[in-house]
Image (cartoon, rainbow, N blue to C red; front, side, top):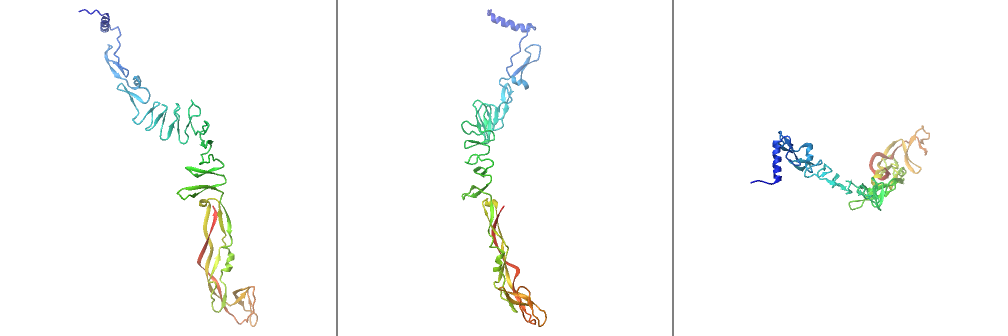
Amino acid sequence: MRIKSRPFHLIIFFLLSCFALPAIACPPPDCGDCCHWVSTGEEPDDGYCELNTGAECGACSGCTGECVSCNSCSCESDCSPTQSCCNDTCCASGENCCDGITCYDPATETCCGDGYGTVCSGSFPCCLDVPGLASICTNYCHDSVCCSSGQWCCDSVCCDYPCCGTEGCCGAPNYCCGDPSWNELCCDADEVCCWSDDGMGGFVYYCNPPCTDEVTDPTICSEDNEDFYKCTGCKQVVGPTCSPSTSRDYSGLEISTCYDGCPQFDHNTSNEICYEVKNCFGMFEADSLCMECEGEKSCFPVVEFGEPSECKTIGECVTQVACDIVFTCFQCTAVEIVSDTVYEETCQCN
């Protein structure tokens, strides 16, 4: 049977020419995108297909970038199952890719979605001030106004200081008074920030003038009071019964009261000695007479000048007695042993 097809004759002729005519070049077999032909002989079909490696991996269709590689003529991701590839970078575990440009942590950051990969965090949210441009991380206030970096938006006003509760801006020389997590009110520069228990487990903050103190009672502990509470009286020969039986040694303390400031921090309240109580006893006084001088009975020493001359007392009072009469006197006197100490509260500013 004869084959009359002209194309068939041409194919047979070409194949025979590859073997019969070495001078005519025949192409090696096609190895595909991920492999290349390795020749092992003089003939074009002497060899085999080998997998592309190293820099040649880029020849694999779609295997481009830092996050993928060629493996067994296929593209595989170099990122772990918990990572994502973003701009040829494997993002950390749990991070997302913003606009295909920037890795970010959605737990603490926000992708502005402006097409520029802008990521904002903290108290400065995304602010698209001019459409078509990259966002800025700041506070949006009002009338399409974005606060500058480092500013706070407080009650529709851009502030250079953190917002002070509902009072808005509160900056130098004034300052914000309150809990660090929620400032409540603005104090003048010359005021102090104070707090008190609100009775419900929280605190109420308030501004006060600085602490001042002044003397409010200069007499209660005055030494002048000792005249009313001292040992008095004397008696000749027999020891007297002292009345009163105790005396008071006053300290001279002046009681002060604190005003304004913060009682917890600025007031230094303390109990100080007002007076000490001491017992009275009849103390022996030799060669003395019990006399009354200026309304007070006391033992006065007697000096003998010789018989039958006059005897004179020492002090403002003078008496004449027979020089051969010398007595023993008992004076009511306070001993140094303290039987009681009385305190009074006073206050000074710290």
